[in-house]
Length: 189
Image (cartoon, rainbow, N blue to C red; front, side, top):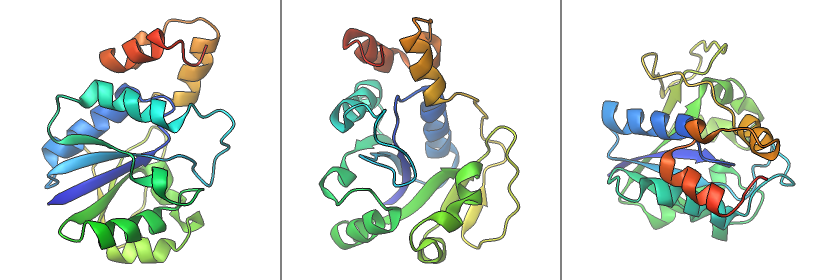
């Protein structure tokens, strides 16, 4: 099986995440897209993160009935902070029958040189890059596919968190089932 790994904090999961993953699952050769919920991104502060199990459950609530989208807790049992190269090694060892590709935005591919063992990632894995607003990408690596026709949705999790805290309506930026879970649990308020 060819699986796309969409890593992220998903703090919170929003329409941009779902739209991109759905597009990639439907319009590429991938069989599934896994939302890999990162307990802690080594390049971000953990202080504003909702508990990892809640972030996972929010995604599961939204995509439970979608066959080719999966919410993954694979990094929960790995050392923190989460490094992509370590997760890929774990997946290769434990799910050797599958091929794993990475899904990332143009902003991430432009800064991949800051990642731990980034050349090993680039040289051994297909990378699928989706466009981001106001970010240009010049192909410099092999194994990189740029999805120029993918939807561009300019939504940020930090904007959503701030808006919820300030009692602004943002339910239109979060898929319905995910929003119901967030609202019912009073998260980000």
